[in-house]
Image (spheres, rainbow, N blue to C red):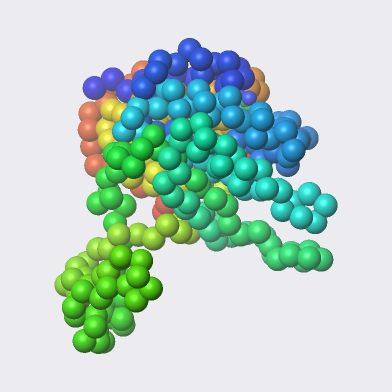
Length: 292
Ligand SMILES: C[S@@+](CC[C@H](N)C(=O)[O-])C[C@H]1O[C@@H](n2cnc3c(N)ncnc32)[C@H](O)[C@@H]1O
Protein backbone atom coordinates (compact mmCIF):
# COMPACT_ATOMS: atom_id res chain seq x y z
CA UNK A 1 0.00 0.00 0.00
CA UNK A 2 1.32 3.48 -0.86
CA UNK A 3 1.36 5.96 2.00
CA UNK A 4 1.68 9.54 0.76
CA UNK A 5 2.84 12.62 2.58
CA UNK A 6 2.19 15.97 0.96
CA UNK A 7 4.04 18.95 2.41
CA UNK A 8 3.27 22.54 1.43
CA UNK A 9 5.17 25.75 2.13
CA UNK A 10 2.77 28.67 2.53
CA UNK A 11 -0.07 30.27 4.43
CA UNK A 12 -2.67 27.63 5.21
CA UNK A 13 -5.42 30.21 4.56
CA UNK A 14 -4.46 29.94 0.87
CA UNK A 15 -3.03 26.42 0.58
CA UNK A 16 -6.13 24.79 2.09
CA UNK A 17 -8.16 26.01 -0.88
CA UNK A 18 -6.36 23.45 -3.06
CA UNK A 19 -7.37 20.47 -0.91
CA UNK A 20 -10.48 18.67 -2.18
CA UNK A 21 -13.81 18.68 -0.31
CA UNK A 22 -14.49 15.81 2.11
CA UNK A 23 -11.04 14.27 1.69
CA UNK A 24 -9.47 14.28 5.19
CA UNK A 25 -10.19 11.86 8.05
CA UNK A 26 -8.45 13.71 10.89
CA UNK A 27 -7.22 17.26 11.31
CA UNK A 28 -4.82 17.48 14.22
CA UNK A 29 -3.14 20.82 14.81
CA UNK A 30 -1.85 23.47 17.13
CA UNK A 31 -2.01 27.00 15.69
CA UNK A 32 -0.13 29.95 17.19
CA UNK A 33 -1.76 30.82 20.53
CA UNK A 34 -2.44 34.40 19.44
CA UNK A 35 0.93 36.23 19.53
CA UNK A 36 2.41 34.32 22.45
CA UNK A 37 5.50 33.35 20.41
CA UNK A 38 5.74 36.44 18.23
CA UNK A 39 9.53 36.42 18.27
CA UNK A 40 9.85 32.87 16.85
CA UNK A 41 7.05 32.56 14.32
CA UNK A 42 4.81 35.63 14.56
CA UNK A 43 1.17 35.47 15.54
CA UNK A 44 -2.09 37.34 15.75
CA UNK A 45 -3.18 39.74 18.49
CA UNK A 46 -5.64 38.15 20.92
CA UNK A 47 -8.44 40.59 19.96
CA UNK A 48 -8.07 39.70 16.25
CA UNK A 49 -7.63 35.96 16.77
CA UNK A 50 -11.16 34.73 16.08
CA UNK A 51 -11.51 36.95 12.99
CA UNK A 52 -8.20 35.53 11.68
CA UNK A 53 -9.01 31.90 12.44
CA UNK A 54 -12.59 31.59 11.19
CA UNK A 55 -11.75 31.58 7.44
CA UNK A 56 -9.32 28.74 8.21
CA UNK A 57 -11.89 26.68 10.15
CA UNK A 58 -14.31 27.26 7.27
CA UNK A 59 -11.82 25.59 4.90
CA UNK A 60 -11.21 22.81 7.42
CA UNK A 61 -14.95 22.15 7.59
CA UNK A 62 -14.99 21.82 3.81
CA UNK A 63 -12.02 19.42 3.54
CA UNK A 64 -13.04 17.15 6.45
CA UNK A 65 -15.02 14.02 5.56
CA UNK A 66 -18.47 13.77 7.19
CA UNK A 67 -17.06 10.90 9.31
CA UNK A 68 -13.92 12.86 10.22
CA UNK A 69 -12.70 14.69 13.32
CA UNK A 70 -10.91 17.99 13.95
CA UNK A 71 -8.77 18.15 17.08
CA UNK A 72 -7.56 21.66 17.96
CA UNK A 73 -4.80 22.02 20.53
CA UNK A 74 -5.08 25.55 21.94
CA UNK A 75 -4.84 27.59 25.12
CA UNK A 76 -5.74 31.16 25.92
CA UNK A 77 -2.76 33.39 26.67
CA UNK A 78 -2.58 35.75 29.63
CA UNK A 79 -2.82 39.46 28.78
CA UNK A 80 -2.34 42.00 31.59
CA UNK A 81 -2.80 39.37 34.25
CA UNK A 82 -6.06 38.07 32.78
CA UNK A 83 -6.83 35.02 30.61
CA UNK A 84 -8.02 36.00 27.13
CA UNK A 85 -11.39 34.70 25.99
CA UNK A 86 -10.59 33.97 22.35
CA UNK A 87 -10.88 30.20 22.74
CA UNK A 88 -14.41 30.50 24.14
CA UNK A 89 -15.37 33.02 21.45
CA UNK A 90 -13.88 30.73 18.81
CA UNK A 91 -15.96 27.75 19.97
CA UNK A 92 -19.14 29.84 19.81
CA UNK A 93 -18.33 31.16 16.33
CA UNK A 94 -17.28 27.72 15.02
CA UNK A 95 -20.62 26.28 16.15
CA UNK A 96 -22.32 29.02 14.11
CA UNK A 97 -20.14 27.95 11.16
CA UNK A 98 -21.62 24.45 11.36
CA UNK A 99 -19.13 22.62 13.61
CA UNK A 100 -20.39 20.20 16.23
CA UNK A 101 -18.34 20.66 19.46
CA UNK A 102 -18.13 17.07 20.65
CA UNK A 103 -15.58 17.09 23.45
CA UNK A 104 -12.78 18.83 25.27
CA UNK A 105 -9.70 16.78 26.20
CA UNK A 106 -7.06 18.02 28.59
CA UNK A 107 -3.37 17.50 27.96
CA UNK A 108 -1.72 17.49 31.36
CA UNK A 109 1.94 18.41 30.83
CA UNK A 110 3.61 16.12 33.31
CA UNK A 111 6.92 17.98 33.26
CA UNK A 112 5.86 21.65 33.39
CA UNK A 113 8.58 23.84 34.89
CA UNK A 114 8.23 24.96 38.48
CA UNK A 115 8.00 28.71 38.99
CA UNK A 116 6.44 31.55 40.95
CA UNK A 117 3.94 34.03 39.51
CA UNK A 118 2.27 36.79 41.50
CA UNK A 119 -1.33 35.88 40.70
CA UNK A 120 -1.40 32.30 39.41
CA UNK A 121 0.29 28.90 39.57
CA UNK A 122 2.26 27.23 36.82
CA UNK A 123 0.32 26.35 33.71
CA UNK A 124 0.39 22.56 33.42
CA UNK A 125 -2.40 21.84 30.94
CA UNK A 126 -3.72 22.67 27.48
CA UNK A 127 -7.02 22.13 25.73
CA UNK A 128 -7.64 19.70 22.88
CA UNK A 129 -11.01 20.64 21.45
CA UNK A 130 -12.73 17.97 19.40
CA UNK A 131 -15.03 19.15 16.63
CA UNK A 132 -17.04 17.05 14.18
CA UNK A 133 -19.52 17.62 11.41
CA UNK A 134 -22.26 15.82 13.36
CA UNK A 135 -22.56 13.45 16.31
CA UNK A 136 -21.87 10.47 14.04
CA UNK A 137 -18.17 10.08 13.26
CA UNK A 138 -15.51 7.34 13.11
CA UNK A 139 -14.04 6.45 16.51
CA UNK A 140 -11.99 3.34 17.32
CA UNK A 141 -12.24 3.34 21.12
CA UNK A 142 -10.71 -0.12 21.60
CA UNK A 143 -7.43 1.18 20.15
CA UNK A 144 -6.76 3.40 23.17
CA UNK A 145 -7.90 1.17 26.04
CA UNK A 146 -5.79 1.28 29.22
CA UNK A 147 -5.03 -1.32 31.91
CA UNK A 148 -7.56 -1.40 34.76
CA UNK A 149 -4.62 -0.87 37.14
CA UNK A 150 -5.40 0.02 40.77
CA UNK A 151 -9.16 0.09 40.19
CA UNK A 152 -9.07 -3.70 39.96
CA UNK A 153 -7.45 -4.00 43.37
CA UNK A 154 -9.29 -1.23 45.23
CA UNK A 155 -12.68 0.14 44.13
CA UNK A 156 -13.78 -2.98 42.22
CA UNK A 157 -12.91 -5.26 45.17
CA UNK A 158 -15.38 -3.56 47.52
CA UNK A 159 -18.56 -3.09 45.60
CA UNK A 160 -21.68 -1.92 47.41
CA UNK A 161 -25.18 -3.25 46.61
CA UNK A 162 -25.84 -0.19 44.43
CA UNK A 163 -22.68 -0.90 42.45
CA UNK A 164 -24.02 -4.34 41.55
CA UNK A 165 -27.18 -3.07 39.90
CA UNK A 166 -27.62 -0.37 37.32
CA UNK A 167 -27.28 2.85 39.29
CA UNK A 168 -29.36 5.55 37.66
CA UNK A 169 -28.12 9.06 38.14
CA UNK A 170 -29.45 10.72 41.28
CA UNK A 171 -29.31 14.12 39.67
CA UNK A 172 -31.63 13.04 36.90
CA UNK A 173 -29.06 13.32 34.11
CA UNK A 174 -30.40 10.13 32.53
CA UNK A 175 -26.96 8.48 32.81
CA UNK A 176 -26.53 5.26 34.75
CA UNK A 177 -23.73 2.79 35.40
CA UNK A 178 -23.28 -0.77 36.60
CA UNK A 179 -19.75 -0.86 37.99
CA UNK A 180 -19.78 -4.64 38.50
CA UNK A 181 -19.72 -5.07 34.70
CA UNK A 182 -16.01 -4.17 34.89
CA UNK A 183 -14.90 -6.68 37.57
CA UNK A 184 -13.14 -9.27 35.42
CA UNK A 185 -11.81 -6.96 32.77
CA UNK A 186 -8.16 -6.18 32.20
CA UNK A 187 -8.72 -3.06 30.13
CA UNK A 188 -10.86 0.02 30.57
CA UNK A 189 -11.68 2.99 28.36
CA UNK A 190 -9.47 5.97 29.14
CA UNK A 191 -10.63 9.32 30.50
CA UNK A 192 -10.48 12.60 28.62
CA UNK A 193 -7.30 13.67 30.42
CA UNK A 194 -3.98 12.75 28.77
CA UNK A 195 -0.83 12.80 30.86
CA UNK A 196 2.19 13.41 28.61
CA UNK A 197 5.46 15.25 29.04
CA UNK A 198 6.45 18.04 26.65
CA UNK A 199 9.41 17.24 24.36
CA UNK A 200 10.91 20.48 23.02
CA UNK A 201 14.51 20.37 24.13
CA UNK A 202 16.04 18.69 21.08
CA UNK A 203 13.75 19.75 18.26
CA UNK A 204 14.59 23.34 17.13
CA UNK A 205 10.95 24.35 17.49
CA UNK A 206 9.70 25.91 20.69
CA UNK A 207 6.22 24.34 20.47
CA UNK A 208 6.57 20.81 19.17
CA UNK A 209 4.02 18.22 20.25
CA UNK A 210 5.17 15.17 22.20
CA UNK A 211 4.79 12.35 19.69
CA UNK A 212 2.39 10.50 22.00
CA UNK A 213 -0.18 13.29 21.57
CA UNK A 214 -0.92 12.98 17.82
CA UNK A 215 -0.34 9.24 18.11
CA UNK A 216 -3.20 8.81 20.60
CA UNK A 217 -5.69 10.79 18.47
CA UNK A 218 -4.56 9.16 15.23
CA UNK A 219 -5.23 5.75 16.81
CA UNK A 220 -8.60 6.87 18.16
CA UNK A 221 -9.97 8.50 15.01
CA UNK A 222 -8.26 6.88 12.00
CA UNK A 223 -7.24 3.58 10.44
CA UNK A 224 -4.37 2.51 8.18
CA UNK A 225 -4.51 4.34 4.86
CA UNK A 226 -6.64 7.24 6.19
CA UNK A 227 -5.53 10.87 5.74
CA UNK A 228 -4.34 13.19 8.51
CA UNK A 229 -3.90 16.95 8.01
CA UNK A 230 -1.88 19.44 10.07
CA UNK A 231 -2.31 22.98 8.65
CA UNK A 232 0.18 24.43 11.21
CA UNK A 233 2.82 21.76 10.78
CA UNK A 234 5.81 23.29 12.64
CA UNK A 235 8.43 20.59 13.10
CA UNK A 236 6.07 18.05 11.50
CA UNK A 237 5.31 15.90 14.55
CA UNK A 238 1.76 15.06 13.37
CA UNK A 239 2.92 14.16 9.86
CA UNK A 240 5.93 12.13 10.89
CA UNK A 241 3.92 10.13 13.43
CA UNK A 242 1.08 9.68 10.90
CA UNK A 243 3.49 8.29 8.34
CA UNK A 244 4.97 5.84 10.84
CA UNK A 245 1.42 4.74 11.62
CA UNK A 246 0.67 4.06 7.94
CA UNK A 247 -1.61 7.06 7.46
CA UNK A 248 -1.40 9.48 4.53
CA UNK A 249 -0.64 12.99 5.67
CA UNK A 250 -0.78 16.60 4.54
CA UNK A 251 1.25 19.31 6.26
CA UNK A 252 1.30 23.08 5.71
CA UNK A 253 3.91 25.40 7.20
CA UNK A 254 4.55 29.10 6.59
CA UNK A 255 8.20 29.25 7.70
CA UNK A 256 10.63 27.90 5.05
CA UNK A 257 13.17 26.67 7.60
CA UNK A 258 10.65 24.42 9.36
CA UNK A 259 9.17 23.25 6.06
CA UNK A 260 12.59 22.29 4.63
CA UNK A 261 13.52 20.43 7.77
CA UNK A 262 10.36 18.31 7.71
CA UNK A 263 10.79 17.72 3.98
CA UNK A 264 14.27 16.37 4.58
CA UNK A 265 12.90 13.89 7.14
CA UNK A 266 9.92 12.50 5.26
CA UNK A 267 9.52 10.36 2.15
CA UNK A 268 6.85 11.70 -0.24
CA UNK A 269 5.60 8.19 -0.87
CA UNK A 270 6.34 5.02 1.07
CA UNK A 271 5.31 1.54 0.21
CA UNK A 272 4.19 0.02 3.51
CA UNK A 273 3.86 -3.57 4.55
CA UNK A 274 1.60 -3.55 7.57
CA UNK A 275 3.39 -4.55 10.77
CA UNK A 276 2.55 -4.25 14.47
CA UNK A 277 1.94 -0.61 15.38
CA UNK A 278 4.81 1.25 17.02
CA UNK A 279 4.26 3.18 20.27
CA UNK A 280 5.82 6.59 20.90
CA UNK A 281 4.98 7.24 24.54
CA UNK A 282 7.81 5.11 25.97
CA UNK A 283 11.49 4.72 25.18
CA UNK A 284 11.51 6.75 21.97
CA UNK A 285 14.84 8.38 21.15
CA UNK A 286 14.57 12.16 20.70
CA UNK A 287 13.23 12.38 17.17
CA UNK A 288 15.23 15.27 15.72
CA UNK A 289 15.32 18.99 16.18
CA UNK A 290 12.37 20.93 18.00
CA UNK A 291 8.25 24.43 17.21
CA UNK A 292 5.14 26.92 19.99
C1 LIG B 1 2.34 25.81 17.57
S1 LIG B 1 3.35 25.63 16.19
C2 LIG B 1 3.05 23.96 15.70
C3 LIG B 1 4.04 22.99 16.27
C4 LIG B 1 3.82 21.58 15.80
N1 LIG B 1 2.61 21.01 16.40
C5 LIG B 1 5.02 20.70 16.10
O1 LIG B 1 4.84 19.62 16.69
O2 LIG B 1 6.12 21.10 15.80
C6 LIG B 1 2.50 26.55 14.97
C7 LIG B 1 3.20 26.58 13.62
O3 LIG B 1 2.30 27.19 12.68
C8 LIG B 1 3.07 27.95 11.76
N2 LIG B 1 2.15 28.95 11.16
C9 LIG B 1 1.74 30.13 11.70
N3 LIG B 1 0.85 30.72 10.88
C10 LIG B 1 0.68 29.89 9.81
C11 LIG B 1 -0.13 29.94 8.64
N4 LIG B 1 -0.94 30.98 8.41
N5 LIG B 1 -0.06 28.90 7.77
C12 LIG B 1 0.76 27.85 8.00
N6 LIG B 1 1.57 27.77 9.09
C13 LIG B 1 1.51 28.76 9.98
C14 LIG B 1 4.18 28.54 12.61
O4 LIG B 1 5.30 28.91 11.83
C15 LIG B 1 4.48 27.38 13.58
O5 LIG B 1 5.52 26.58 13.08
